[in-house]
Amino acid sequence: MTVQSFLNQIWVQLGDEVIDNIRLAKNFDLDASFVEQKLGFIERRRLKDNANVLDLLRQLISSQKAQIDALELQSVRALIWVSQTSPYNGIPHLASAAVEMLGLSPDVLNFDLGLGCSGYPVALDMAQKLLANVSSDRNDSVIVITGDAYSNIIDENDRDTALIFGDGLSLTQISNVDHGLSLKIKTGVSSHTEFSEALSLASGVLGMRGRDVYNYVLKNVALVADHSVRQTRAEISELACVYAHQGSRHIVRQVGRALGVDEIVCPFYSSLTGNMVSTSIPFGLVQCPPKDGLSMLIGFGVGLQTAAIIVEK
Image (cartoon, one colour):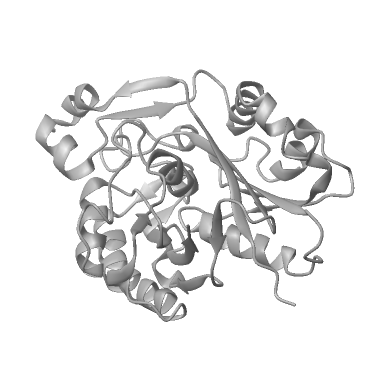
């Protein structure tokens, strides 16, 4: 028997420091129109002082305690954390800390995914596969956390990266309880590691070759999107919304054009947060709640990799 999986709840926690990007852009001789029209990030959210992604999770648990307690945490069977900026440098893994912080059972399967902008669709696919092995008469669930603090790996004097990234975290509950958004199909993925150096930490801070990333996106995103939608026997023109990774206002606009949809269907919604890597898509689901029908979640970037999954309200 096939078990249908649903995104039941999504919460988001943003870094608590607000960065005025228009003011900062003056340091690079960039005017307000460039920030507003090309980057789109008028403000960015950043962690203060020496805070890290675990602090974001603590803040989320504190601010949403009643709702998180209502998740029936005893039903959680697995926890996946998508991140590339662990304060532990990978040892121990972030997911193990989250199990303790949420008060989950010690027998909960937990692991990290070292993915960036494509991480949320991939994690949802993995959660769906885990739940497929659970009997449909049980309320078992999987928690997916995305969280990065790119502010810890950015050179603030680097014109290519200093104005782009924001810090944020999301927590999503996926279960077979019919509530929220249904996950329709497995993830469509396209990886081209020959372009991996276009976004890398080889020098100890994030380096980005923006033109290479842009060319990759234009060449590959539409192909993955079309493949994913066709698995549902629908067409891209039938999508209610496309939640595209928020690389910048310009790149989201170009993704929409490549897919043949307008800015209402493929919106830019991160003008006050910055590019929050794997958190940009779940943030969009909270910021711009889905309309009835099919929607696509499509992430692209570090790897370089594109991943898409279809949901339905």
